Image (cartoon, rainbow, N blue to C red; front, side, top):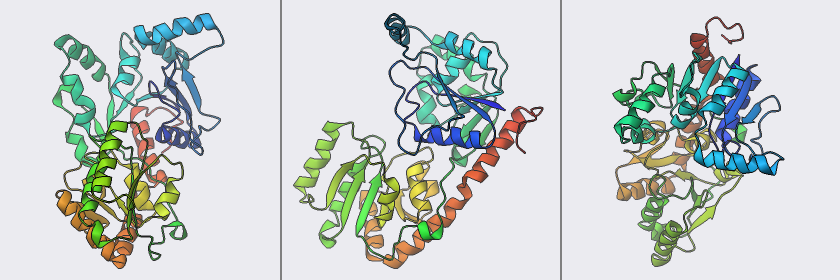
Amino acid sequence: MKIMLVRDRNVLNNNWLAYFANLLHERGHEVVIACDTYGKLGVSAPGHELEPGVRLVNVNGKTSSPLQNFWRRIRSKALPSWHLFDRLIKAEKPDVIICYFPVDLYNVTRFQHHNIPIVQMVHGYPPMILDKVLHKNPLSRAFCRQSFARINTWQVLMNSYKKEIDPFFAPQNVVRIANPVKQYAENEMADLSAEKKRIIYVARIEKKTKRPHLLVEAFAKIAAEFPDWKVEIWGMRKYPEYEKEINDFIRAHNLTGQVALMGYTEDVEGLYRRADIHAFPSASEGFSLAIADAMSIGLPHVGFKDAHSVNEIIVDGHNGFLADNVDDFAAKLKILMKDKELRIKFGHNAHEDMKAYAPEILMNQWEELFQKLCPANPDTKK
């Protein structure tokens, strides 16, 4: 089966997209990733390169011709791309089109008349991804609705998200297929019996959603009781003013030797193995691979009860704790910091819980969906 994955830009630095495309390719599918970007193709992280059999087609990429590049640069900023995707779809003739974002859906449907089944992914809490459409002017909403009517299947990441798509989008078929999670053998898990006295948070350093400042505030409430414990916040750094806020708080509360913003790393597995607790104060997630990967490797977690997805992956009192507020977050951290055996128990439970998201299981769910969308295709795996 030929599957076209569509994401308009920043394709190569999306590790999950490369992983998903490679898994499809390994199962015998012909995979084409279609994008539309003149200058934001991205760079593959080591270990996340596309397999040689996965094709990447950039409908507006740079060429060796300066004149053509001049035109493409203007076109990328001034003109819609639907006609370029229309041409590509007619040439490729995919069996299924999978759209990463709503903008990708627009690119493969507007002024186009193909009847290829379309799967719309929702990589997050649906209202956060989709509700911006509801605030457009009436003409734009009507235009968007025509595209959403072309969707055969919506794919969401949590069961609770099935009912979170607004009726405006008229979702007819919504399925939950979570992200596949890398599995680790027992001897590859974090060794929680060897205490490192280190709490980590792996997420981009961003205020509205990821909220690392809440972890710093929570730890500040108990830091004096645990002078040999450290908090490390690892993730992409793009907001210097926000970082200054956090660093000012760290200095004001005498936490300079205990709390640090560490920045980006490619050795995330190594971070998990060098930690005792993964604290995750995010406000909302789609299906957090940072949590899932850390659980798979055996780390206990602390999150917030009102955080979408976080409050489903973390099972309170089983593989971690869920907190009501910052004070409670600090209290839950304190319980885990004082009790190594509880950390080991929660970490083991977390590791076992993630077996339900093994790539083989999740990719079988995708195959079942493809079978329903293209029942006559002999290449669909059953």
